[in-house]
Image 1 (tube, helix red, strand yellow):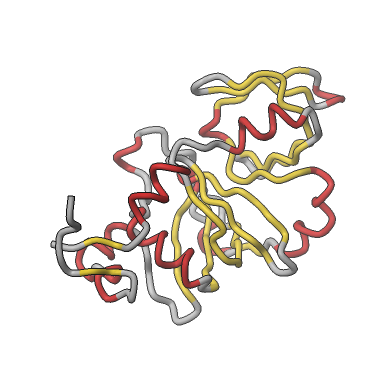
Image 2: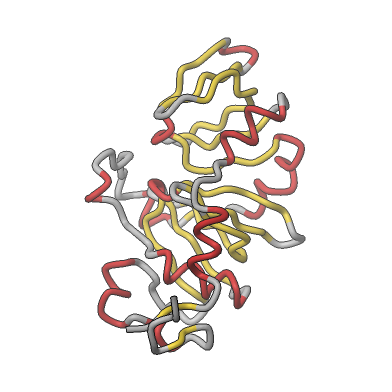
Length: 197
């Protein structure tokens, strides 16, 4: 048994945060990357448990399931972010749909995300439709991972939209791989004893 220093405290503080709350409170335009390679600029009018209601100008109001959203950032950052998003053609060619059943998604353990965030390691997220997001983990919560791109530009990736996560050396951080390798136990933050209560 053991634990990561600061891990429990981080989850207590941040695990229930949501960028949808931030977007709703801002009353500003945000850019939504939605499945089927759609990109919509919209304001969040309502944030409910499973859906958001957005207003996107030409398309009017849309009730959007949160599981359709892959990537989100402030619209003012659009011109800086779009050139940084690459495509893995092989993954794109798989024509993957949103994975509605949580048990069938490509999970990443919080114990894997926390050391990556603390080390500020450059990592590569591949999303279900092939988008590649390169950056540093700035934070994470139950449903989201905040990533800082080149130049310190912030974007939010939704955990349900992830297909793969690797570092520069190609090391995989998906739960299916990390359940065996348990890289977090080799991290300098890991203490191999039970914390005192």
